Image (cartoon, rainbow, N blue to C red; front, top):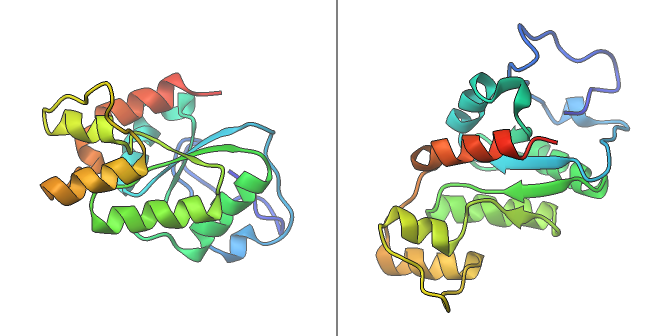
Length: 168
């Protein structure tokens, strides 16, 4: 997480306590190590759970807390420009698709994270066929056909496993 250029980062009770960043705190020059893995989620439940476990072993995680603010989009865009490897996700529903689209627009080289047809079909207890398209467009089509949302909380165990396993 970048530090504000005008002084030290705000005090936190512990190193794993989530840090809220404003657009103002992101002004100035900052950087990250090249190829740093950064995951982006929509729901603060994911962020709060990750702060507990995997805690310090958690891959960098940004939470948009719903629709992406300008601060979130600037942060993701800046990280992408600094060559971070960004993976994004949100709930599979109408609003979630808007969030993912905003994030992918801010970081065109980003990938999606468990925001795909295979994950969605698994939630519906259906199996993807070998020729099943798996990208975001396929997911949109499946959601349009089934109209069953998939909220991040339903994937929490898998998301936390990813954040722990993929720590770099």
